[in-house]
Image (cartoon, rainbow, N blue to C red; front, side, top):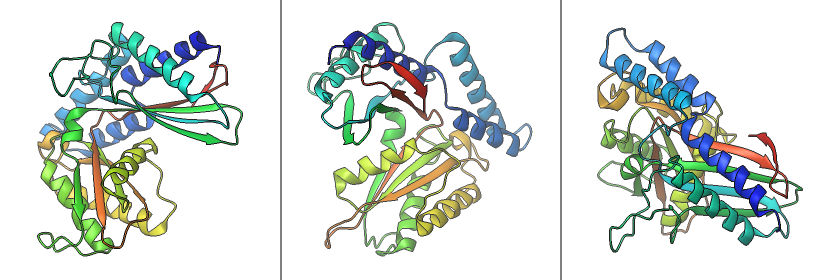
Length: 294
């Protein structure tokens, strides 16, 4: 692939905008939540502060949060596309975004505790590539903060402590337990990404990919769509509220997917995303030119 500079420029712009500009559907969800909370309540005050932060980040071209998180890239490319060169261009774009302050130096060497100056290291950023019958490149970026990552949970069914069996009611109990256990930590109101099935690794991968869905969509699998709606309604009754300060809005959305599993295993993986649901996508040419935002 000969168009390294063009690829780097397009991917840098994707990173910059993802870092500083909250997606429209997420901002609208926060505004609806603000209007739904009682006047002069702590919940409304917290949401007002969040919305002011969203606007300030946009106006000042500054990161939405000091924790710019793990960078997870999802690429769909034409068959035979040079993904090694694409990964190289992406790492260059990450390095540039870090040096210009759009990304915090928060990639840490686990053995030494030393931060990486460029956010390019073993396992960072994270790449997923899929070759498809297409002529363009679809790239999605998810920025996943550490605070929200800390309150994710994984369950193995049956779970006697929760009275959860290997059925949808058992899954529901696990998801509610994850929300109650968080108690607003992870910067609520958040979004839950859930995977039913898979193994311990693929379950979390699938759960995180749910964050790429828009807040107003519903699973096309009817049983999952009904469970998403029910859990969102039940979350309001817990009165956890924004930042755990009380109120109705603990969640902006619940997104559930599923994978096949082994007979001996039945995992429910719950990934938590903070209110700063930083995700964005772009459609690019095979030479790295920008076509449109997704």
